[in-house]
Image (cartoon, rainbow, N blue to C red; front, side):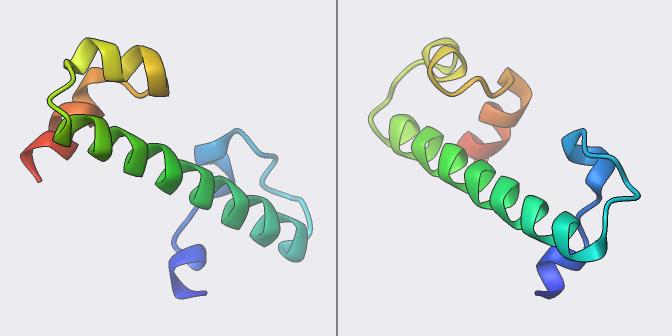
Length: 71
């Protein structure tokens, strides 16, 4: 729950004045989706797939992929 409180609706293109519950549900869903995409990118990195291919497959930008690769 604390993790959800640090997220902002604007970061996900949501209207900031939605009810708190609706916003929390939307943000939790989007955060989970983002984590799943990053997990997929990490798996592809372990398989030694190129950054460009990972970007096309996950729609993550190269900066994010390179950051994941360093970790």
